[in-house]
Image 1 (cartoon, rainbow over the protein chains, first blue to last red):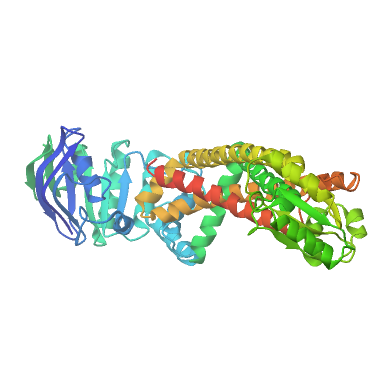
Image 2: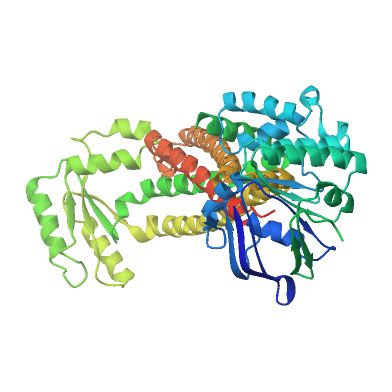
Length: 225
Length: 301
């Protein structure tokens, strides 16, 4: 589903973020990218969603080489990806329902699809009763659920999560992780960057550890060290 | 498809209202710029009426009495052709009654009283004379000579009637043209700035849109429509302005005494509609240009 082949990313002239990284992620996998701040986790996610382009090497996502993709094709790549972030990136002037609907609206989905899909996915993340609230009327964990609903509503092949539990307390994080696991069980590949020991150790899934842009460990059923 | 169009229109309208102050500034500036463009067109057209009889380097017009005999006309023609060192005989033109009447209809367009006194029968015919020489004194002495010929009603010299107006017309054209070009550029700049501000205000939305896979065109179109709308509204306002100006001017001109020449300075209604159409198209164009530049440059907010 995802294949990185000798990927190097240099920001500006000399800031080496990712250094000759290669790995494969199979369909349906759940992968943690771990490592300290600045180790290149976020850069790898940004390379996969083509917010950045590799300086060297190839990045394959869902069978397409995203480095050689013309810019006009990038939106269609993004439609097969769901992105979630530490800061949720919700639109504060829109309700929960509108935030999720927005993702379908801007890719031109007709209204009957929106009316059908949005309540379904809000039910899935457990926010069916709060669909008319605004984001700042919700707790952090609830806001992250909205952002997961928005990422998942278009049934992406891959979920890319950048520190999704970074702002949440342990109990709330646990809820978010079981939601991501549920989504993973539907066959969606999940790649999650984190430095949250507890969630990594609790899940026991594949762990790719980065240090200063290099892969230093790639372990099935790993823990955070 | 329908959902996309609906989305674009809804967003355009919402953004239009959100930035009301900036939008008003952009609309007014484009309206004023376009008004000046329209005024330039009208002024030029009005001057043209006045100058039409001198078109093509004509420097002297010999008016022939309407009751002159064909022999007298032939004599005048012969006399004019007898001075090939002063007169360009190849360009010498005789306007018969029908042609002279057609020309008079343009000259006296704003002066119905004078026009009503003229008929195709009573109108003087005319020889249009293009001189070869630059020596104006020589042309003037010839004119004095022609006045004495039988059948000649009057001889008019461009030097006396035409040159002041021609110079004035050129000056007014240059000034208004430069001013309108500058203002048009300002209008494009203001629309550009309004759209840029609108995009900046909605940068989070744009970020999310890109994240979930909206195409750049999908993101751009509401902003471009907004700019187009601003330019178009400016165009409509300028049309109203041009129409009001022209009505006031035509009304004022009609009050002048007949035969003073000022009465030529009006434009026909068909020309006015043409100018208004040009202003609408031009307004839409400046809106489209300003917003297109903004929307393509600031998509990475």
